[in-house]
Length: 80
Image 1 (cartoon, helix red, strand yellow):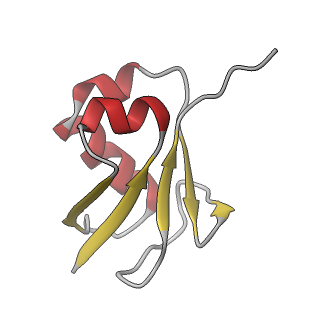
Image 2: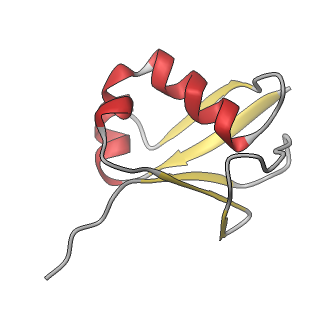
């Protein structure tokens, strides 16, 4: 099963493209996906925080994910 992940801001810069397709981790959870992405792209692990949205809602690490879910990696945002 492959997952398609939308990337924004610094996460897009680190990966080098706006979307990424990768095999689903086992178990297929948000936390396992983040772990796999940090292993593939070590600079992601250096970010202060990084949120994941599944189907347009922020998702906790234990949330299950599937191939039809819309997944987005949301970097930390600074404002002023």
